[in-house]
Length: 554
Ligand SMILES: [Ca+2]
Ligand SMILES: [Ca+2]
Ligand SMILES: [Ca+2]
Image (tube, rainbow, N blue to C red; front, side, top):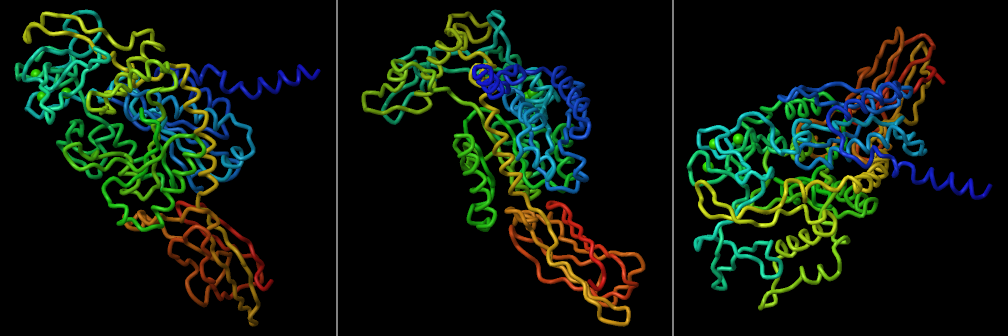
């Protein structure tokens, strides 16, 4: 008996983690089947709509999760979860799907309550063409190198082994040297110490099909969705990928329009690629330009994320050129453009714990002057990890090849996805700690309430009614940035009733946004009416609605 109970307990504790759906990559057809199965099984909780059709003929699905028995989903505060903006890092799309499944299927009390009090929107795979082909850009013909020709020099499998990796060529003008610790790794020559490079490194195997001296510089297509949003968009950022104009792709246009159409979104999270870090905005404003109100909230949510998931959290990179600040990103569009508290969660990185101690020590070998470049240390660690976890298959050994235009080269290097696509068995662990944080965030959402609603008879068929509006949540009904971007919806308080004549003030009053926990001043009406029930209502796009019935004179 006790054994059976223990077994039952253990299986209920581990069942979600054993669920094969959390341990595999889903192609577009199986994603679509899972979403359709969810709506069949949970018709009062889940609805799925196509947002856009990609150039590859796939739909960008939008999923709404909200217990509709508790009111209209569009009239509740909302959290938006995005996945798979970049197709070559499909783990983010899997995390978004896994979080969606966990949210829908959970019987945990807090999760059930969150499904009633707020609305969750998911765009689980924004770039389905990219995820399917494991490529970053869209297929829209695009001039990556701005030379007037489109897609003219794509990467190519020049040695015919079925893989497209990298190339290196001996050349005294090159910047690269072979690492003395792991000769598969390349390191940049330190010219400040008089070192000279011995190799030119070509990031991709290819032909220089257009004879411009550069190899594989213009792949098929190449618009990066996360450089295509309509804020700080630049036509020619480096690296390329911004697109012909902002929101020129059906996917980005659909996401931008989704934001515009869903004015109840308070918080948005994108499950992105590698990094083991949560980023928060803004990238383009100095933190001192953003009042403490927003900075404090972004920091608090990020700190709670770190506690819940164990991952690091930091502000998004805002380096000066030449490294460049990312342009046209969804994160800036969401925060700066719409005033939504937005986060980018990067869920996977070099699993240093899998690297044997001896290899780790070797990877940390310093040069004669006691220095070690972190990029080189990581490259050595990745190679050891590939040896141990991928049986060495992540990296194609350098091998000599007679290149048709470059002459004698070596072909080799990382296989596509080896460092970007986590092994399927690690997917479950990446998503399991995400939902608890989202439920915690759901508890912080702004919520408009009415308090102190009362009515007095003034005699002669006249009555007074008064009420105060309150934001019962931690987040404001509009962020500082939403107010700055003129995206803050007002807090509206209204008195309504049949045959009511308001003799003092307007029936509908517009108040300024309320900070977390803030209560408005008293709002008073004087009405002429038969003695009857009247309704006091309050609403604001990002904090839901409230309604209180009061009997005139009581
Ligand atoms: Ca070109
Ligand atoms: Ca191209
Ligand atoms: Ca070329």
